[in-house]
Image (tube, rainbow, N blue to C red; front, side, top):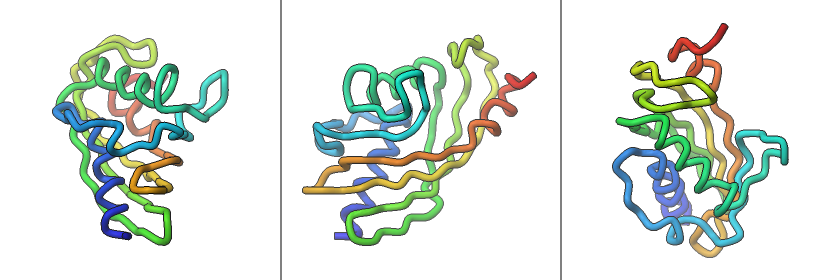
Amino acid sequence: MSDANKQLARRALEFWSSDNDDDVALVFADSYVNHQEPSIEGDVKDLDLGGWKTLVSGYHAAFSESRVRVIMQIAEDDLVATRWEFSARHTGDYAGHGPTGRTAVWTGIDIDRVADGRIVESWVDWDKYRLLETLGLLP
């Protein structure tokens, strides 16, 4: 089960890739909850409207040539921890900033909880400072 859960976590990360056309319903449960990107409503986002799909769609509008590399994975029981590295070219509006054309590289960690063969919950922590610094968007 651990290997299957690791593969599921990898598939989830690949949705951020520019060329992924996988079916979200095969990876995430309908009741999926994502803890990242704090907003006025709080940091919990569902899969659909106002949630994870919207977050990924906004990322794709802002970044192209996006790639993810899994650095390390650890699985235990129903949890998978994945350390990853992203690279992407800033070619659209992001956080109120126009495109810089720069390529950024940043790292992070996802912890996914799996039930019945799909991810039901994720906790994400990533180096937003490194991304903004690389793009030249910090004061």
